[in-house]
Image 1: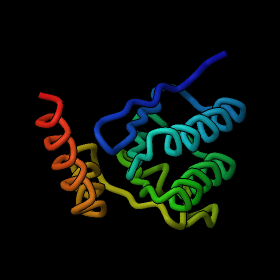
Image 2: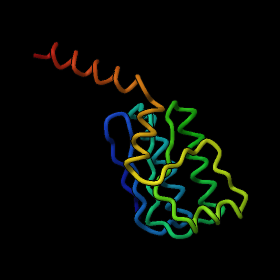
Image 3: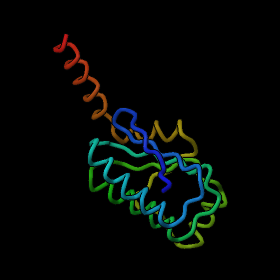
Image 4: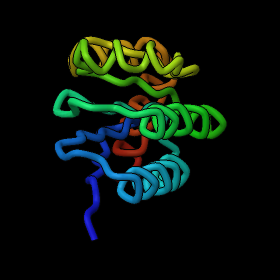
Length: 136
């Protein structure tokens, strides 16, 4: 069974979709990602769809669901790398992707996530530093 890897980077989860998503794979990604947000208490999810050339209404709904579920679990979602044809298709399908923030590329997406999470990540870094000092 295919799986899309979910990487953890500090308070964020990174997902890079490098294959065409079929319905079962998309549903598994949705379930895996929501479980990882809950398990890691992630504050943000960055989804790179730069390799995705076709998005249908089902895929649009899955991305919206991921953002909504993550929001309920106190995590923001940013989708990066959307190709113009994908954006056109989403608008033509009437899928505005509520709750999904977008950025042109990974770097801008990460900056957006950090700005949305703001001081929470800085506090986590300070806590880690304090914990490291206590351990020594």
